[in-house]
Length: 171
Image 1 (cartoon, rainbow, N blue to C red):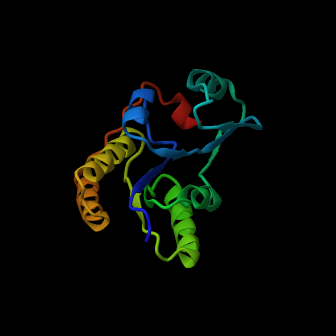
Image 2 (cartoon, rainbow, N blue to C red):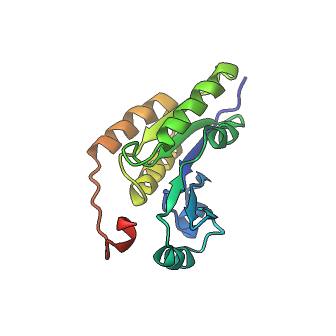
Image 3 (tube, rainbow, N blue to C red):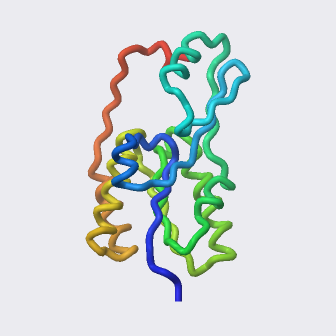
């Protein structure tokens, strides 16, 4: 019999502070960013202030790469059933990478439960969804009940975007 438990996985657009990471553990799969030929990995080692300065000084247009299916395949390992929260599928191919990985993984692990959540948002929207998942898990809801509640939660969310400057957005 499989051990019951859940794992929450998200891309690095999920905006978890260190305090939130301690309270609501989420395995983050990083985006990769390229500026003037230099690769930056969006993980705990990335200095966001330096990255913004480097982006402002960059001559070339910055590039980003979503996590690969392999990144998600590695995250699916273990006995836990998985919830995967991704940045909006309208903004990135991350959801598609996770879907490919899910399909591949389930071919050899049909007993595993994996549910993908298209946040239809980014950043704090992903964070709120991850926190909601933890809340529902802690309350003892089943995997299928969590899917139903979180789907409604995402559909009820509204995302607003505000930027101090359009300079980096233009790049």
